[in-house]
Length: 133
Image 1: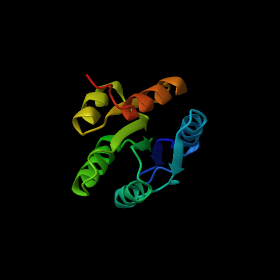
Image 2: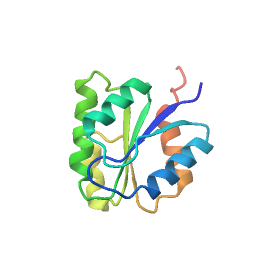
Image 3: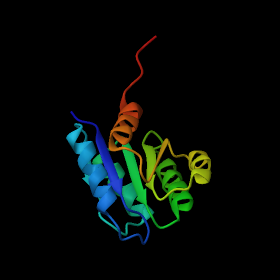
Image 4: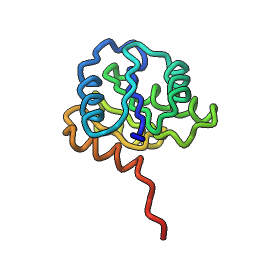
């Protein structure tokens, strides 16, 4: 069964081309991808993540609210008892904000311009169980 990934566009950001390209790259790499569409509320993203039993939530954010939206998403997943779902974030992210996103709970950060192969490899690395000792 393929690993399930939710690609979501939280907040008021209406640009979804990059998210669709990433979703297609993940799908082509063998992931099952659920795409929420634009202008999603954090609570709705979390509800879909739980309903669809995803391993990863990918947030695509171009609005500048990436730190706050990532933190709110991670907190909402934890509150729902789903802290095993990895949250990754991509979009217009200044290098100075990458540590802040990691501190907010992002398992990986993919700023604009990250090669698709690197995104696929990063998501894959989060979903592969480590080999037993």
